[in-house]
Length: 273
Image 1 (cartoon, rainbow, N blue to C red):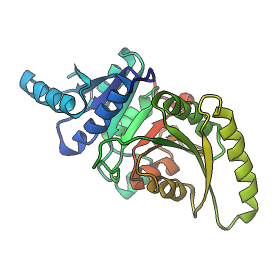
Image 2: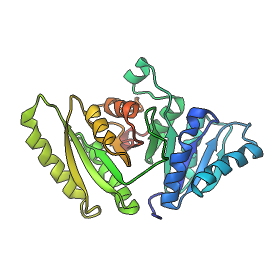
Image 3: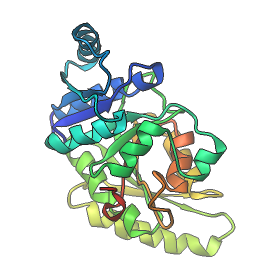
Image 4: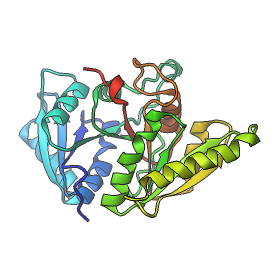
């Protein structure tokens, strides 16, 4: 299965067990795209033998071509951003396995490497969260895009449609409505119908699903949990959010709880220089 969405799947890897979590999903995605896996490191310890071990591991998982980007002058997150700037058609795949503290959650932080990547990435980022099920790599037959009515969330629709078209996936446009606001149900359903119709020219099988839940993140996680072979796509920030925060509140909650990988992209006006 080949597509032209991405040519380079870039993985910042520090040699730790949590960091390794992104390797299998990255190589699965690279196989689907016919892309190269680029393993980024910023340590002098990345000697030839270590690289060969990592390369053998990555290739055994997917057969994808593997390259290395070593920059000892930058932090790991910034080295990954540099790799993305100098490689054509990139996507970053980053492990976010460590559970953040309550203060970090309040500030939208995930971890030093992930935060740097999210603040500075102009390309999409695939996040492997603490609850992401990695037992089967990156099984992928559906992509769920979560909308909250904001232009930032709607900007993920073309990204999700490109995945659906190129990787032969079903596209599900998801929305959440509160059980306390029954008068909103019809309005939200009409909104989802319009947004789904806007991408059906490129993803003819796109459909929508409205979930009733106490808050948006819970509804998206609930929707994802019913689909074992899906990736969830959403903007890093929706209706609200500080430009200084790597993730908005809803995206942060989804990342912390979701059993599926999370595809995010930062609104262009919030990308740091």
